[in-house]
Length: 164
Image 1 (spheres, helix red, strand yellow):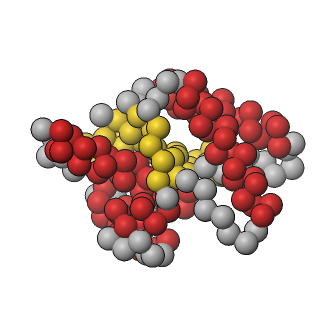
Image 2 (cartoon, helix red, strand yellow; image 1 turned 135 degrees about the vertical axis):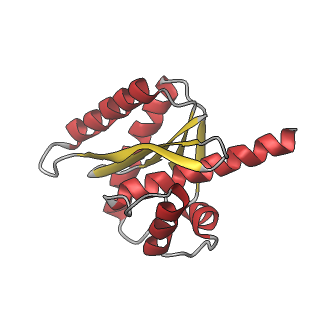
């Protein structure tokens, strides 16, 4: 099982691929971020995100994907931009016929850090520890994508246990 985790945005979209090792522990296969220039028209930025998600899916062949649900803060413009990026990512995942899991930010924090109100630094430290990494993944969006993928991996493991 290889899970693609995505932290959507228009300026930066974090991505990660996580699987299980032989002992069942999560293992980072690849992670990074898709960056788009702020001076580029939105349509071209969204097109780039879509193309990069397609390329990453073709390269890594994940079995399913996980994406963070929208969190509406006070900045409406930022929320709209994130929603546009999220929509393009969902389209690319659907076009690839990948099963998609969606998680609220608090669910991801609860799974990874054990506390639904954990701050970003706590989640990043736990991602580093859970994956046995030498450093906290950068940019933050890549660390968030890893956390989302870990959440999906744990959910999938739980579902398999319940089915057995």
